Amino acid sequence: MQGEFDPAGLNALVIDENSYSRAISIDQLRSMGFRSALGAPDPRTAWDILLQSAPHVVLVEWFDTGAASLDFVRRVRTSEESPDRAVPILVLTARSAQASVEAAREAGVNGFVRKPISALALGKYVGKAVARPGPFVATAAYVGPCRRRRTPSEYAGPWRRLDDVAPSTGVPGDEDVLDLKAEIARARVAALASVVGKLVAGDPAGARAVYKAVQALVEAAEQIEDRCLVLGAKEMARYLQAQGATDRLDPDVVNTHIAALAQLASLPHALVGERDKVAQSLKRMIDKKLRRAGAA
Image (tube, rainbow, N blue to C red; front, side, top):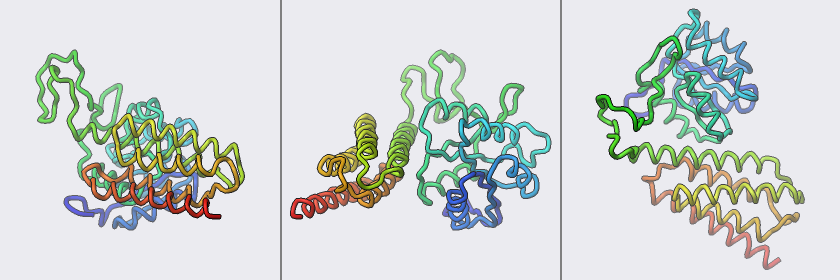
């Protein structure tokens, strides 16, 4: 990691019931340079590890309805036994519902990270949470990082922050807008990846489910005006339409496409050239696959 964030000497804790997914997160944290990255399959085991290791950051998977995950977060924030009530906590999940995001924020998490996520993107989230955690609030009703991200229009008091938006404009800053668009893009790609994970060759119902999820991604990409993501998603839709719900539909091609879409969703919008290269490479791949299929 660069700049102010140096994970050397820091401990991390990953809570995920899926051993494979947990191992990936642990490996990513270790590759960042964390002194130790420990894992736990459930919140109960994680609590014991938390007391012993006093981690500097916690990654917790969204368990089932989220109740177990959020109960753990609240326990960290409010228990007198907690070694650090202000420890940064990030929720990792493939869920995209706004209600889930709000529930996580109300419980006191620092961030809600949607999967799949690259090591580079995870490093960005972790680095920001550890190096720049922001103000910590402890009241009778809420304990956790300051949640004020919006500017209420009815507020008439003084605007003390340099990045506050005056009520006359009501418009968030460019960076906030881009962050929101990136969140939406990652959420839709994650939802598509979840459906693709169930796809097998010769499965008409699975193919139709994937096509429906791709159409939802195209619509979302158009709404957030992400030209590169629109192109990448439409190319996947083109491939699906051409192959149809038949055994010609190659799950490997679809999975390769998903990986590229995830990369598009993770690359900053400022990297216009790189994002365009990824999108154009998808178009070339689909052109090539369809030419071969037509010649067969």
